[in-house]
Length: 148
Image (cartoon, rainbow, N blue to C red; front, side, top):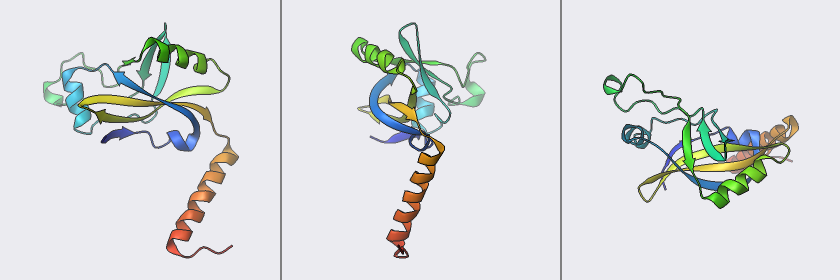
């Protein structure tokens, strides 16, 4: 499973409680663009509208900019493909207090492009500082410069 795009801030800004795999509705040139590594899900989020999950704010530039249709929108909302049970579960979780749906990564699975969605709760500032401190300690241990 090759990662095509990741959201590096997802695990830093949020505690991921659960992950769900979703398909995504794309056109042919969008698939080519994503497989070429041109997609970005930084700052994107998942919203459930009328019982259907949508990926909002993801950027998929045209595969061939000079050959793209005039009505092509790079940041168009894209429908996500989930079973009814998964959608109902996400709706229940999304209605919980302080929980949001965050795209974590785009990847290929058996020639299909999939999106990993995280059910997440936002971290407080002190949680982020704690995570940074743990990374620094781990890095210094690997270097052999760690002192207690």
